[in-house]
View 1 (spheres, rainbow, N blue to C red):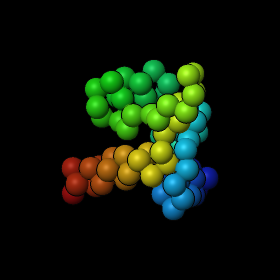
View 2 (view 1 turned 60 degrees about the vertical axis):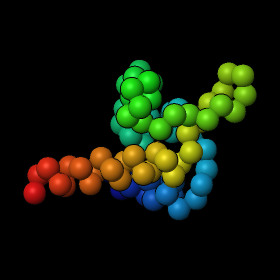
View 3 (view 1 turned 180 degrees about the horizontal axis):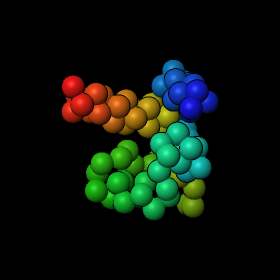
Length: 77
């Protein structure tokens, strides 16, 4: 778990682009779930890099993770 936490902190600190497998590793979500959440507006949309390649801004993914954690803390308190 500490590897994921440090990855989230790196993503938050540096504005980089994350490929799908990196987003899956950070969020624990499957590819299909990520794209369903993007379609419903519940997850940040990817940025088109080329005709076939996309990536997610690391700060947007980190903010989504932070919001999920904050929501969990609010509902359990």
